[in-house]
Picture 1 (spheres, rainbow, N blue to C red):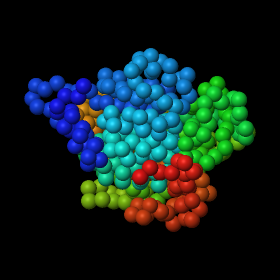
Picture 2: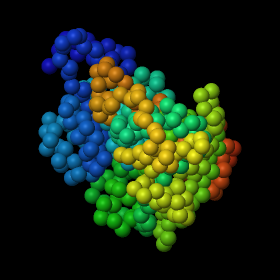
Picture 3: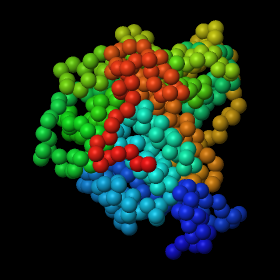
Picture 4: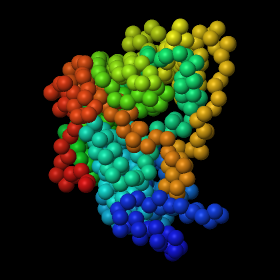
Length: 432
């Protein structure tokens, strides 16, 4: 039964269409946030774990057997294989929605939740196309929703300490950054008629994407291999870029790039065309507080060079900030190192100005209760995701350099602009 405070606030939210943000009097118990969780296996299982102390009202998983554990854990939660039907059922009972679907349905699921006036947590990358990013950001702002993108490393102490070092000026001006990830995509083959191979509704899994299916010769097809196919994912860059580029974005206050140039090598003996190795060069214009920045992404290699000759022991994946006078800062998820050794020996850590996180999910949940703010809301993670996606746009347009106009959301290339959006198929139009 709703207490009086919840009844009044819920009624007001329903009338205005604005998501509920609760406030509590001193000493008053905090009601749990009421949630629908879309996608409860793999990353979804981790996100469900992160919000498990709340009131889980609804669960959705297109491949029903993969939801067995979650349904046992939350036996009172309503379940559906179609998140549209689930939201129809529980929309009036929930405060917020967690989206952990494959990339190509992030935007549709998030927009469906925002259209109902719900707060949203969405796994990285925020969306699959630049157009989707802008739609979701606009809807979240219009609804005044509390949002968080699932770049969980953003809540780690190491990232916060790296940001403090860069922003303290210890390196001097930083105008060159490298980020790399050693992962490579898995080659696969297309299947035109998967038929009996699928044990779930293909149309529901495809969502708004009007494309044929695929087969990657892997046991966990398609629940991981979709990452390596353009209709559903964006290769290693789309899969991992938000994690690594988050660090320079945060530390240097980067926004939209001015130019984007991409090159790459093809997967051998494969039908999927995401690049096996890749280099993307972004330039960001100078601001009042820093100079112009040249940022380079590499994947499929163990260091910041496509020929594999540059390596840093212990940093098979990482980010390198280059400052003045040869000063450098090397970082990955859990470690940081100042270079050269002489600089490291003479350096003291700056004051901790960024509070230690209570947890990436907890930041979002407590903000819904009126306590603090999440540090990776869509207003921040949207431009980060857009920048990541533009690397793939430049590659798919013919390995070219693009001039990007952030105000209009278009480039100087007709070929590239064709990859900025998709036309959703009938029945999956973007929620309004």
